Length: 451
Image (cartoon, rainbow, N blue to C red; front, top):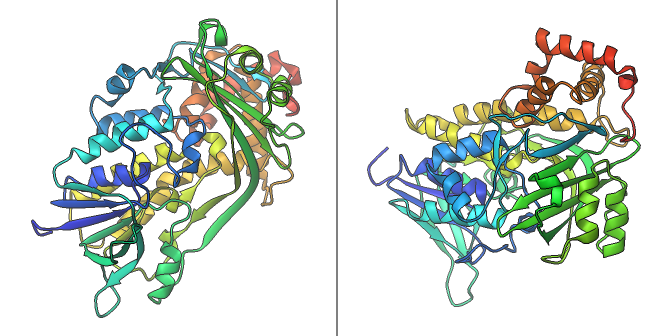
């Protein structure tokens, strides 16, 4: 690519910022366009409604962000975000069974989405050649005369006094999120839109911040309990910067967490983790509850398209939007940014033909975790083959055995944190420990209500 090469990134949320970081190593100029006016301090944004909800940064995500932004963990810690041993400092209740804790190398950070995005946005904006263009909407793609190569974007500033214009680019990366217009733009150019996979989950989640006291969570930094068939309710507590704790209450298929104090307490008291209800019941609120609904996981299969214009890529939630209960989105976007960086280090030619299959392989593992787990619920439409049923039954037995076997808990958390593939749970050593645990706990055979 020439020295004057320019890349345009659509969206200045996490996916777009991480893409810009990767592009900055190869392109002289990287222009990041976002429809919002970007705040100068950590704050929620209109175009990122999920930013006010509790976010979980998985251990693998933290390590990748640290690779892309050296010293990030220390920077967030200095801003007040607690560093968390995800096995030893979190109360895990899986299928109602409390996991045995143990020290581990699975390190996360208790950080709000606004603070994390603010710090990363500041780091990206300071990179040579990177320009953030806020308050501007991308309205379409530019192509060459043949229509086979994307050559830039059309933009419309949201301020009425400015006129629409075009921005030329050697590469356009669409990180516009779940609402990406990429499929429509491709259709306008005469290309087929990508096939899509939908998995309906009908999740409603409510997040509220509270002041954190030393006695909360028994002195630990988090608690989590998952939904199970027959009891589609879940909850998470996570310590954050500013001596706060975020409580997220989740319901599926009509189980909608309320937003009044008494209703939130009643909902939390039905969860397996008593630490969550204790905070909701007694802690001083640090903000109002915020509700958000997530209808379905969505995966766009760009890797299956036989015709695709050069000079254009899609990344992050615009590729795959996961059930947020599993906290996978930011980590998957970070891994895609690493992939993009590695591909750009070589020849830039034909990058889409290499990026989309590689991104699909990144998505496969977390998609299998999320969709396979969601298919436990009879309300979720989808095929339940022998493998899905047997794996879910096996994982349930693992949760039971992990109440006294910390090795199994660590194995599960490594998969959940995308450090190891789901297949690692089926290694002979893990299977043997699960079988031994099942003999020790004969009630392991049937998933059901938390206990």
